[in-house]
Every structure is written in C-alpha cells, then in structure tokens.
Length: 171
Image 1 (cartoon, rainbow, N blue to C red):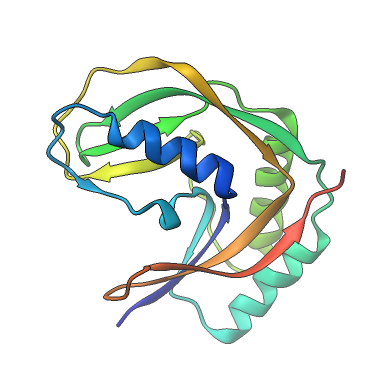
Image 2 (image 1 turned 120 degrees about the vertical axis):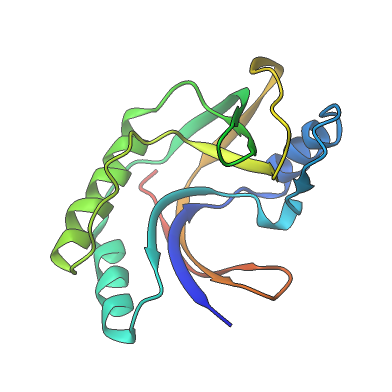
C-alpha cells in the first residue's frame, strides 16, 4: 500500500454538495466518478515522504501567513490526455497565489522541487472519462477558503484521501 502526501484546499459540506450536484448532471462521459468526500484542490504534491521531510513540510505550513479568500468555481473542462473531468476557477485570487508561493518557497528548503506547470485550481470530478465540451457554469460555486490541509492519500483504501492536519488562514 502506497502513502503519499499533498497540501490541498478541502471543501466544506456546502461546496461538496454543490459539486456533487453538478457532477451528477454531467452527460455521457463514461468516466469513473470521484466520491464527494474526496473532492479537493491540490496545492502542492509532496509524494511518498519520510517522517523528517513531513515534519519539515508541516513546519513550513506553520509559518504561512496568508489571508483567507473567496474562490469561485465557474468553469468545467477536461484534461484530455489524462481523461480528467474537472470543475475549476477562472480566477486565481492573490491570497491563493500567495499561499501557493509561500508553500513552494518553504518546501524548497525542505528538499522538495516545485512543479513548473502553471497552477490551475480545479476539483477532479471524474477519471478515465470521454472528453466533454468545456463551458462556464450557469450557477458558479462560491467557496470561502479559510484553511488549507495536509492530506494523506492511500491506494487501495476508501476513502482514499484523509486530512491529516489543517492550518487556518488569516481572516
């Protein structure tokens, strides 16, 4: 069994419910649906890490001083090569980018290498799906973000993801 860690934004019940409603309405994608208890937005993937690296990553998180913010999930699309259907945000609020930058800068000192791809905040709704036409959501989903979390991913278990620890953002 593999254990991997990542930092993420974890929705509350209101956002999970809205995302699940949207997910159920997706037409004919034939993909494997992600369970609503596993919805999240990955900030930084850490991978399979030793206790020392995890402690360093948690210390970095302890030092983050970023403001809370509102994220608006207003788009739907597909990553065609991976067959991932997603719901995401067209905007990237400054506090979100500040949070991401603070984590990446600090984690570099812990020996982690930051991902080079442009950050695209999204929640995966289905995997191994047929491509669906991208579009804007008629009813965008408001997500007030007041914390971020360290999440453990375990293959072979359900639910696969479990929040290990969370850190509040500054109000």
